[in-house]
Length: 202
Image 1 (spheres, rainbow, N blue to C red):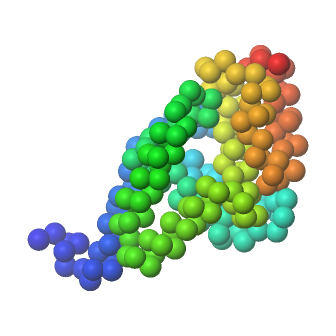
Image 2: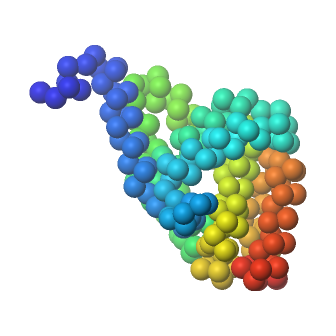
């Protein structure tokens, strides 16, 4: 008998979830850490987003519930434990990716006690729908953070995927829906990317 078997069922389920989500540390992304150039993992990404949301919430396009935004950002990529990471500039079967992520959400949140499973799955679904003010800002931060990663890594994944400024702007346009301030900063990042030859100008 292991230690989990000695716990009350609700607590055992909560620990099972917390142990499982540690696997997010093993999911590597196309972006690289800002200071050592090593591939960023999805857990590091989620932590950085949560911190950015806490610090930058005053720049949201509309008032947001900061704690709820942080919750979204801490869990938004948990499905990558099953579905893997799909680089923004990569070529993917969108429908297959969405199906894999939905199945991952079913399994991973399903590890929690039923009431918490429903609560956290609803938060994840809200983020995916990107219709509420909280979700729009969370999406903005999620799209913005990789721009800094690339800028701090001599273009990072931009030259690797041979992308242009217009392609990047189109793919991260949700930033503007959540924060005009972050979109303005993004434009300065694009300018520098083009100037240094990391982004194609058109």
